[in-house]
Length: 102
Image (cartoon, rainbow, N blue to C red; front, top):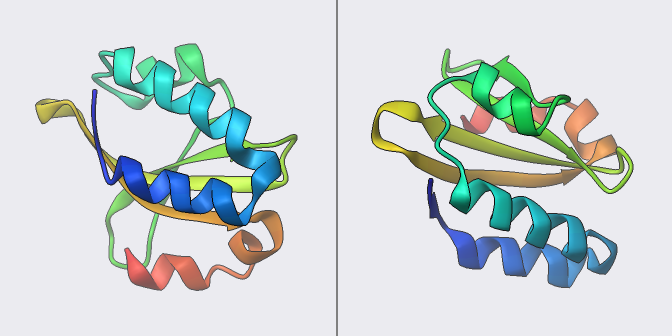
């Protein structure tokens, strides 16, 4: 998969140093993946969720760092592209404000 905004991930792990290792691991796996559906994603990341934002767009949410963080991405399966949207603490994610931006 092609990851759009990979450098944004580095910014996230600078703010949340304990998330650096899981983010790097996710990045390595995602780049090598050939996902065609959420089912494919769940083969590698069983806890990944497809979530419909208020805009009606479906995003995929990954749990990181022992459930402390959420990585929100938009996956365009047809083109093999993953767009990085947000990296949130569990508390930020639970507020649902992020759904308004997608």
